[in-house]
Length: 341
Image (cartoon, rainbow, N blue to C red; front, top):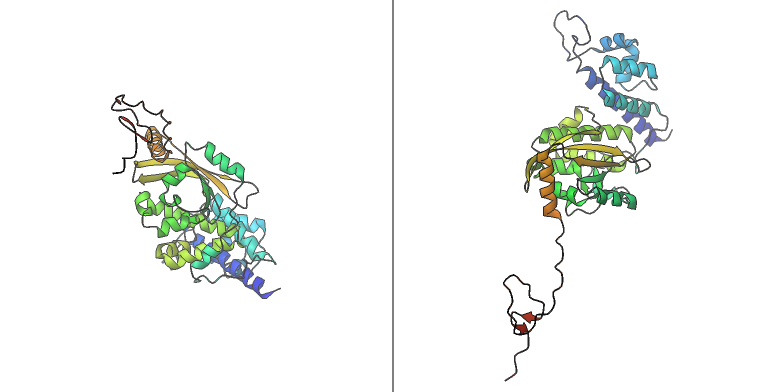
C-alpha cells in the first residue's frame, strides 16, 4: 500500500478512536444503569463498561479506540451506537469514520495529507469548481420573496438571490464561492452582531463541518477551511476538539439585522442530487414579524425603476411644481447656448 494511503488510514482510525472516547465521556454510569461503587477517576464510562455493554471484548474495544482494529461489523457499530446513546447524525458519523478506517484505499486529499497549520491562503487556492447550473440560478430568482442560496459541504456560498445577499451582509460583494459562511461566522467581526445567538450558530457550524469531513475525507477545500479556522480561531479549535457533529437539515435561526431589526427565520436544507454534495438552503418567515422584516428588507434591496421619458415642454408654458423637466429643457423652454460677445 502506498505510504500516503497508509497515513490516511491511520489518521481515519485515530479519528474513530477520538470520537469513541469523546462519546463515552458523555454517558454517565447512571444513564447506562451501572452502579457506582467508590470514587471514579474517569468522566463518563470506562472502556471495560462500554465493551461489556456492547458485547465485545475489552481487548477489541481498546484496539478500536487506539486505531489498531479495522473493519468493525455493523452489529458492533450498532451496539456501540446504542451504548453511547448516539443520535441519528452521530450514528451516521460513526459509520463514516469506521468505514474510512477500515478501507484499504482510504481517500487522500489531492496533494496528499494536509498539514493542519498550512497558511490560510491555501484554503482560497483549493476552491471547488464553481459552476452552478442555470436551472438553480432561475430557481433562486423564482423564490426571490425569501432568502435562498446554494451551499457546498465546506460552507462556500456558490450562488444566492438578492434577499439572501441583503440578509447576510458578506454575501453582497463576494464573487461566487468566495464567501464562506464558516469563515464569516468565526472571522467576520459583524457576525456576532448579526446573530444574537452567535454561540449556537458557531457550534452548529463546527458540527456541520465535522460531519461533512467524516463523509467527504478527500475534500481538500473542506480540509483547508478547517485548517484555517483551527489556526485563526481559538474557539473554533476548542469546539472542533469536542467532536460534536451536526447535520443542518432544518431549524430556526435568529437575526439582528442593522436595517430591519431582530427576527427569526425557519430554514430547510435540501440536498441537490448529482451536485457534489451541494445543497439549497431556503429561509421562510414563521410569523408576521419575520414576514414584515423580509418585506422591508426586500424593499431596501429592490432595484429602482427607471423614470419614464417625458415629452419636451412647450416654450413659454409654465411647469407645474411636480412635473419633471425633460432633458435639454428648462422650466421655461429649451436650453440654448448664450450668444458669443
